[in-house]
Length: 206
Image (cartoon, rainbow, N blue to C red; front, side, top):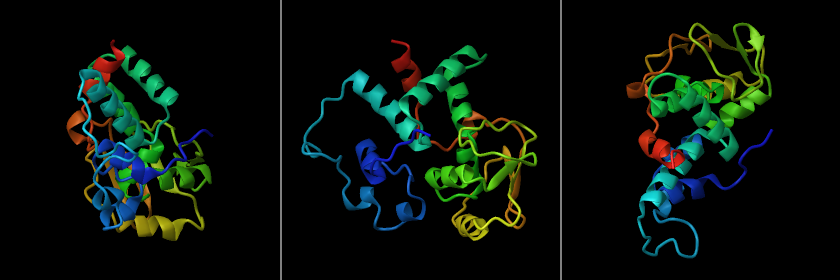
């Protein structure tokens, strides 16, 4: 499985804001953005020319890093979103939000998407009673997500639920039994990602 193994705090610093890539650490003073708010690299504190292309590219990179998706995967999501009826940008965010690793974070069953991917790859979660080990699995309305019985990761998941804020209205979670249900597709107003999807559409439309 291809994945990004680079420093995560540098990614947040490059985008100039917290992307919450490291779970609980991002909420403490050890957060890279808190300690050094300027971009990484030799010229991080220099003045950068803000061109239209650069703004669009940075927005695409921010979205890609926020969801932990590689370049080819992200472009594939955009192509799929552009072929669906409706607004392409909103379709793109709906596809990214419906990834199983992201859903675990939204439900509070994982502290970060990287942790969620690891739990999925190790076979700790089931969807509709069947074990799923693909982080990019697209959940659908009516799907029931549950932790595998007698899994050693139960305590890790319970620790993650303590960091949970508000659960989106398109999901329903039971933190006692560690089960959840997908009620419907996410709407744009329910997506908490710090992304301006229109800039991404403009970038790929060139």
